[in-house]
Image (cartoon, rainbow, N blue to C red; front, side, top):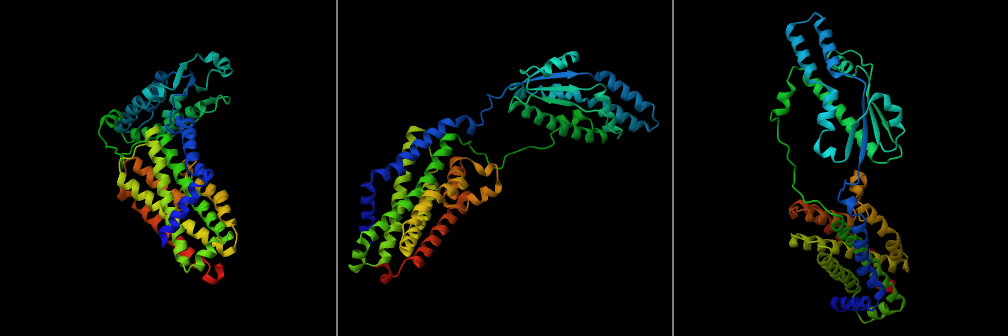
Amino acid sequence: MIIPFIKKDLLVLLRNPQELLVLVLMPLILIGILGFALGGVMGGNTSTISAKVAFIDHSDEEKDVAAFIEKVEAVEMPVEAEKALVQGANQLRPVQILLEEVFGDKELKEIVELEKVEPEKIDEIKNDDRYSAVIEIPEYYTLDILSAALLDEPSTTSMKLYKNEGKEVSPKVIEDVLLNFQKQLTSMTVISKAGIQLEAVSSANLGKIETVTERDPINSLQYYTVGMSVMFIMFIASHLSSFAYREKQLHVYNRIILSNTSRWSYLGGIFISIIVIGIAQQAILYGITSIVFDVVWKDMIGFLVVNISLCFAIGGVGALLTALNFRIDSEGVSSFFGNVMVSIFAFLGGSFTPISETSSVIGMLGNFTPNGAGMSALLQLLQGTEISAISHHIYYLLVFGLIMLTAAVFSFPRRGDAI
């Protein structure tokens, strides 16, 4: 008895071209617009970042190192300790490390142009808008760093950074570079105090770094293909539950009940119809995007399992919306879900932007939404993750669908109340 209801719902949907446009054409348009518009951002393109930095050095590092060695030799201490301090001073040269190892890095040189400037031009450089930042090294800087690091004397000087507030990104990049340099300098200080040669540390194989999983990067078209697909599948639940309530208003449902048809067959028909339409919608969206946008799925079994589980969960939502509409005798529940809850779920689930990367709490909440769980699973499949690693999302979708369906059964009016 369920098959005629499925056929009925499919025919009703096909005769409403406006609904079809929302369910199929709209997500394709949004995938194209968002995918191409945000391609550089999602792809992590840094070619647009360009920073010109002025480097002004008032110090003489060679003289500072020599002065530090004289200071060490003037203090009575064991020969081994003196030798370790002298050796540390010769290795721990902050200005040289900053110029050669930090700003001399091949990747950093692609976005940062470092220009050494004479100290007397500092006022002129500060007013030159071409520079993103100005780094000023004070006099006796190396001597102060060595004395503070190796002799535990209080530091009396520090490097200065002048940022051009007219530029948004590049000054922040330079600030982060200097903060990382400070951390590196602290580590090198600890090593020098221990009497370890820095050359031996840099050349020794202290360990190997490996990633936990080798995953392919996700581009914007892939991201928004999944994001829009899992978002617009939720509209199926609101549309079909609205159709069902209109059937009640037009007394179609009453005639079905009077024909001695079980109300569970009617509710089950809504549930199965949403699953079937959801599978068809996803097949159309992913089929077109695979041809037009080259969004290809390598693990088809995992892809099908996740999508069927997602459709099952949305079917449960649609059944519950139908039951609540009938219970309160209003279409308001479906309208509220389609107009408000879908947007909230899409935001939490990350359909618009990968918000989980900025907030772990929202990311956790997003995975409790059906679209969020489905999106997380599908994105991981695109990255080459095995289905066993996303099984918890699949189980969640199935359990979520069962809970919604159970709530729908208890909420659906009894036979006499329905009429």
